[in-house]
Amino acid sequence: MSDKLVLYGAGRFGVFAALVLFAAGEAPFCFCDKKTSGYNEPITELPIISPQTLKSDYPNSKIIITAFMQTHVDEINMDLEALGIDRSKVSQFYSLHDTIMHNDELINYISRNDTYLDQVIPSITILSSVLKNDLEIKGDILRLKEFYFPYNKRAYCLFRELVITLLTYLSGISFTRKNIGIVDSLIERHSYLLDDVDVPMMINRNDVVIDAGAWIGDFSLLAAKGFGAKVYAFEPSNANYEELLRTIAINGCDDKIIAIKSGLGKCAAQSQLKFDWNGSRISDQGDELITVTTIDDFVTEKQIDRVDFIKADIEGYEREMIIGATKTLCKFAPKLSLCSYHLWDDPVVLRELISKANPAYKFEQRVNMLFAWA
Image (tube, rainbow, N blue to C red; front, side, top):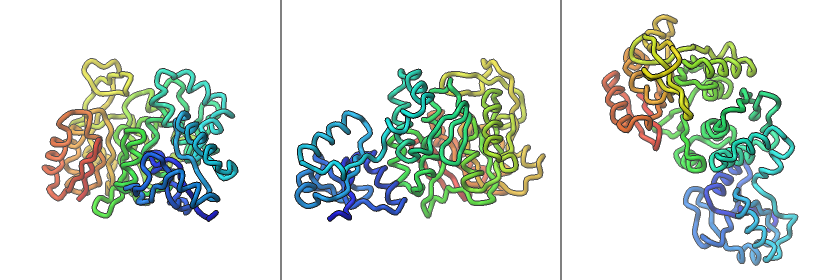
């Protein structure tokens, strides 16, 4: 029975752990959970056994604890001790302590932002479960495996913002509805990619990608360095643009990511950019003068002969961007991955605008994302 791999804890993090282990070729045999034993876990379809069954039928199994709240981990350890389970057979899917305690900067990062522990800690926890020793901060650079980012000590939401699309990629799991659903639920963010047969919202090698609202270049870097695309990264704000340039430079992606200091809208203009704690948005009451162009004008000016994928997270300006991309949508029919939660009627309005530009488009609305393809 020693060849059995049992995951103790059938909650959301346990399911995520199972997905990662399946992707790594180390298939779990079952879950163990005293609250839901006797059922099959619906996403992975693995059976859930009770602690008593674990002790009687699989006493020599390898056990991985898949809770991430320390109180739950302590409770499971007490259960295993009461069962007389050999402790040498027990490990954790992640160890937040082992991941951060060797790095003073991570410790300081967490202590500085203790007001936001409910948002920051889960992000670091889940990243540490996948990256282990490949998560580190050295000086002002954050490394996640082969991806490098400027480390901004002022941005408490850094890990949370990076986590979903990049985490799924780094985990090795596929971007299916099932998998993305469980990863989404862990952080309550959204993925820009989805890889089901009827919704192939993925980036292919040598694709031409427009990243609207590039921020510090997280999605641009994944598209270029992870998938081999050429990316036009639009970021209008001074601070974010400088960080975007740093991301490009420290990853050696100058030939793959072209940074454009501009917003995207329905017409070329100058506008004000308003900053708030949650990011930046174009507003007449803003305090930074920025340039806004259109996708159609940019494509024509740069003589771009195809556009394959457009990702947009631009704080409610997605509909303005679509109006300014009418010719591009009609001519090239790029895949569209659009945030649709900034304005209450975005899911309806964005569909109407896209269909008006190109009636061939089909749609899938996720919780926070509208995917469109032709």
